[in-house]
Image 1 (cartoon, helix red, strand yellow):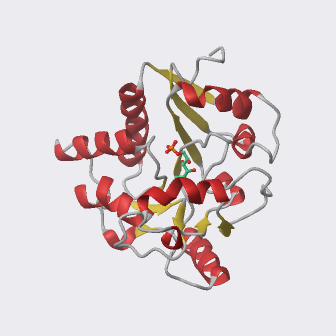
Image 2 (image 1 turned 90 degrees about the horizontal axis):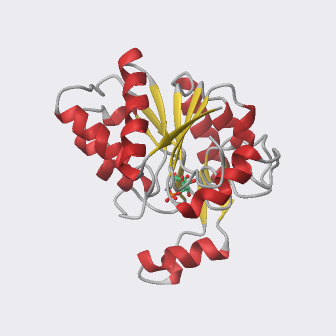
Length: 243
Ligand code: F6R
């Protein structure tokens, strides 16, 4: 496990984008595993900037995202597809036919998850998986206690997650109650993993997940067992550990 200390959020974003760029340059037809959330937004913005300068070419890249809300279609501005399109896909020369997320509009959970596992297998697995880190150590929607053996599965969102999401929807009725997510097993099969973390509010979970015991209670702790993990975190996020 390699930890790269960045000065601040912008520096973290640049360093993470550099690692993703290196992957694309070394293997133009690579498969990138992507994440949503606030942390990678700067990383995507940096990649877009380098693409616009002519330094990056996404034409052969395939992407598979970690997760998607069940019941939201792609045009819903809260869907993860919308987020990816807004932050990256619509701004670079990626072939949209090669951008994949779990199908939030598939009502049959077993089918949606099996289909997504097949997509990941068919594209040949993930070369580089980008991850954010939840305050409780979650990665994707894999919440504390979930079995490390899981592949793509459907999760029931916790009451607190639904309440937090309520502000983005017209009413509580419209808030998604479930999501499809890659499981820990799927994530651990990626050849390389890149975790981006920023802010003092993530300092305690960095210490617990990467310097504490490996336990399903802290899902990200399993990354200690992967043989190619790079964590790019800013000084604030690393303030409780010695690097
Ligand atoms: C995103 C995802 C989540 C986030 C995590 C951190 O696709 O699956 O696990 O990476 O919740 O979110 P932020 O970056 O908003 O702190």
